[in-house]
Image 1 (spheres, rainbow, N blue to C red):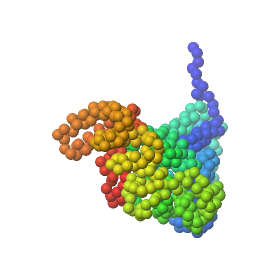
Image 2 (image 1 turned 135 degrees about the vertical axis):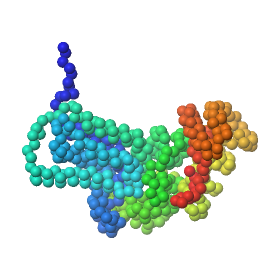
Image 3 (image 1 turned 90 degrees about the vertical axis):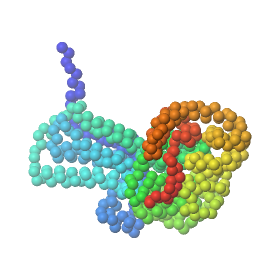
Image 4 (image 1 turned 90 degrees about the horizontal axis):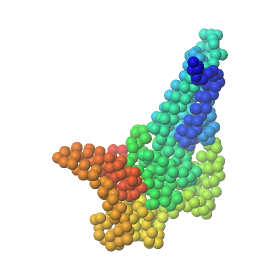
Length: 530
């Protein structure tokens, strides 16, 4: 009889088992969750100036956080930081195996500890760096390693024991421990934390002015969060594609990933950046200041505030922030790029990114509180006077909030500025408006006539679901009707998505269709655009 294949029982050394553990941890830290770790490092403000760090050092265990922040600097380079973190986690596995005298056939099983640490990081999501102590991702594994090392040394000297069989080798089956841990971590991160990874990556790309990358990231999400939709829109604004492509992603937002404490909501993640790229530099600066007052200095926010000061011609303030940023290691490139702009307006206007922000500067002189929140949407949704570049953002905000009643004149102005050419979403908006307003049909006969058949095709596809909802709601209480409305809204979104996502018809009739699109004020937030 032929011998059974027992190749999986071939011997492997401890070095090979732990080497495999290190490699798989490194792949996870670099390729799977590296963007979140790198974004966490961008939150990290650290300097040797005790006065600047007083906010941290005065906290309980502040000196420990201070040390951890120095370690977090390694993640300024995603690969170097990942090597360090993977090495620490691998040492935890090795020492725990030795401490517990794990038998040869179970060698490597202690990866359950790194699995718990990285699983915790995945569970935190954007809260790993948002309004949280960023150094925890370094401190937690390092303190775990230190604790295990102390216990190991103590046990080794207090209870000396000659290890038996320490030179024995394991088998290929030992690889199951690191492989299983890697599979669990990767699967968990991509399933539960996919949007967190994309949010962090898009925020990282923002500082690299990688607008096309941000757009691709936004469109790769199956169910984007508000943060992803916001950064997708910034990419479109910066590339002049907002009206053409803003509805290429679904707007069926999941629950907020932000930990709900102190009245926080998801807008805290992106409001400052969105205000800035909408030309609302004062509102962006206010967001940054609010964050720093409540949570202490953050490098990410200090950089944005420095740019706000530069665009507002506040030279002394800009110098102050750049000097503070310059005290943080590895930030010389940022300071050297923007320092000359403080006193030379021509350099600001020659920078494509900042010049576009300047082109959106408000011409209205109002307080931020006069607009619905968030400011970047409320301002554009109510804009009545602005520069030509703001025409696009004003129309987009109205389309997003489904306020079509004030779109007609804006679309007319847009048509004149673009030689009569209208993007498909605007043509679809006019066709929807023409259903109730014959004047639109008369003003844009070619557009409405060419789009009418497409709109009717949409209605035909939606009709069975609408009829089914009507039958199910007949004779039901108001409460039950509201429940059925949500059920059938979700059903219609799902069934029409494949064929109609990317059209304004789909967005207007299927998406972001909460009853309170303009939300009433609550205890923790002002009324605003959803």
